[in-house]
Length: 61
Image (cartoon, rainbow, N blue to C red; front, side, top):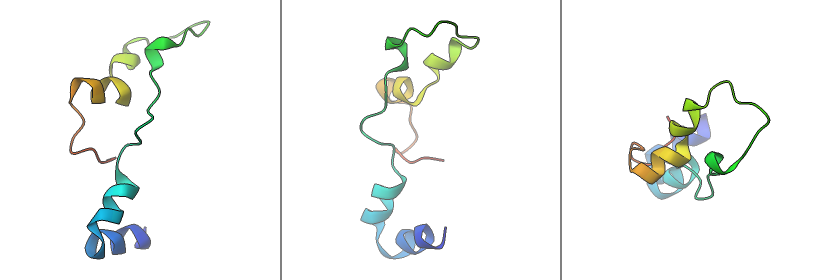
């Protein structure tokens, strides 16, 4: 956590790289598991949120 804090204060570009969502977020809706007790979770996934433009500033929080 100290390294992240130091990056945030001294190297905003590195901080953004460390804390942003990855570019290769999997598309969960393409998977067909044998069962899914929480199908609404797919619509709330990071992939779906990125596709809809609802991720806040691209950082993991």
